[in-house]
Image (cartoon, rainbow, N blue to C red; front, side, top):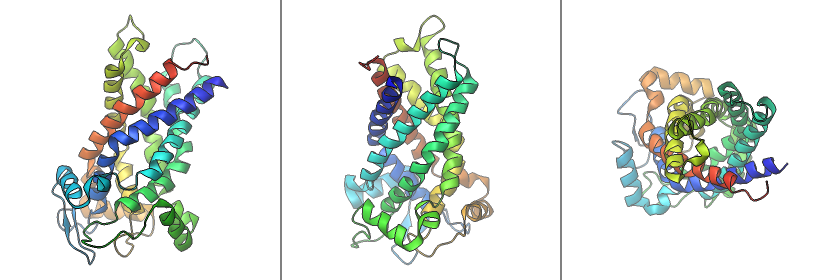
Length: 306
């Protein structure tokens, strides 16, 4: 019981710290992906939808334009909802992974990579039930104000956004829109997350030392590299998920479902579209891992009730 409480606390603390470090880059990634033209016209980072045209040359340009027009609040738009959600999500992830490892892995035995992969897969699936609706709300908040000079936001906050989606589309087509794409991304990501972090920390510590001997910088570096690895592997799920969940926010809906979204993206741009906007996401992944995983490790190391 004490180990479960420790894992929950460590995950919640790490999730909050990690989100604060990387939220601006998540906003940039979401805006770039949301502007992909699925018909294959233009450069894929332009949209009008009856409003002022928006053009982002790259992630840095999106960052600068967002900061100039909306200030720092624009980069952190929609953060309060996921800040609470990330604490809950990471508490779920680390507690489920920890419990699975205690079931699969004999105490005192050599850690097996397959057990870490299985535990991460299960944790990714479980937390998708919370992650998917949370990211839907966050994305719709992030897309507000794009190219709408002088126009106030449609939603004053995440709660109003949630109620509006519930009333207009219900649960399956509304609140849980994009759920299976989220499952694909999260199960892929967390299958690699814990095993990659253990690999990097053990490599840095060397054969004659424990990873517990690593200081915050090296733990952060291992966490940052882990973040990059999992995003490279799972990003092809994230592009259609972001596009599908944002569908209809800035104009008429284009997609009938997740598969229709994937099919139209591939037809319009080819396989390269599934890595569109990955550069700011890799920065986000590195910063998130650099902040989150050392926070989790230090909570576990100095947990007072052993």
